[in-house]
Image 1 (cartoon, rainbow, N blue to C red):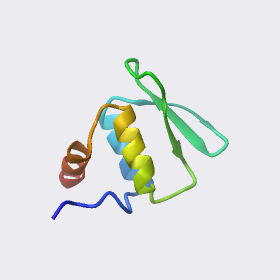
Image 2: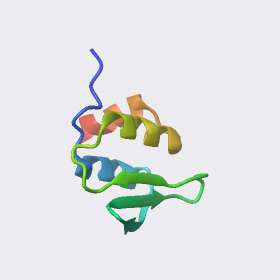
Image 3: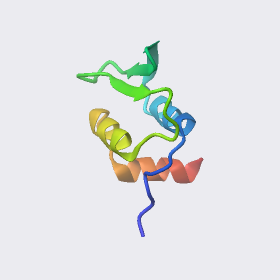
Image 4: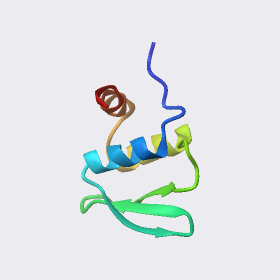
Length: 78
């Protein structure tokens, strides 16, 4: 059975973004902006919602060129 992307703590998702070499650029109005030089758009996460909703994780994995399997492997390693 595949692991779930539900109930991923905000701190854990931030760690994954750092693992993927994204940098926290700024926080504005409850939203964190993360970026990396090769991305066409930044990753936005809401800093006041914990755990991170599954649809936010999926959208941001797509933005950074990652996938569910890579994220699950990361979760197993922490």
